[in-house]
Length: 108
Image 1 (cartoon, rainbow, N blue to C red):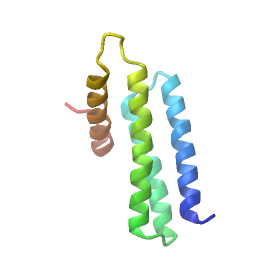
Image 2: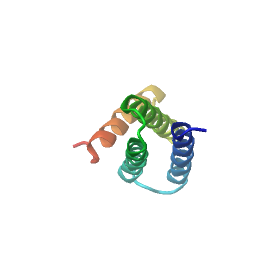
Image 3: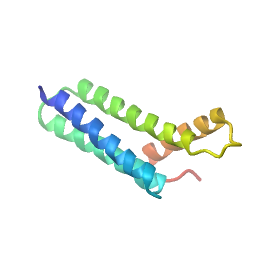
């Protein structure tokens, strides 16, 4: 197994475990999403020091981000109030996740 495959497998495991903790605890979105970002950035930085190409690192980072985003969206849908529309919750949650991931703060 090469370093990229190992990093991907380990990254997915860490993200899934982090999400499972987030989903069962009363934690804040900001803390959860920025922690996920730090995990992905750390994996990317490590691979960069190991000589993995930037394109492969960017692809892996995007795949890990999409995994984290989908887990977050699934959780938001699962935990929505029964009177909330699934499509509205999905759309709002996507915007929320992306904003926090990029800016590391809540939208105003």
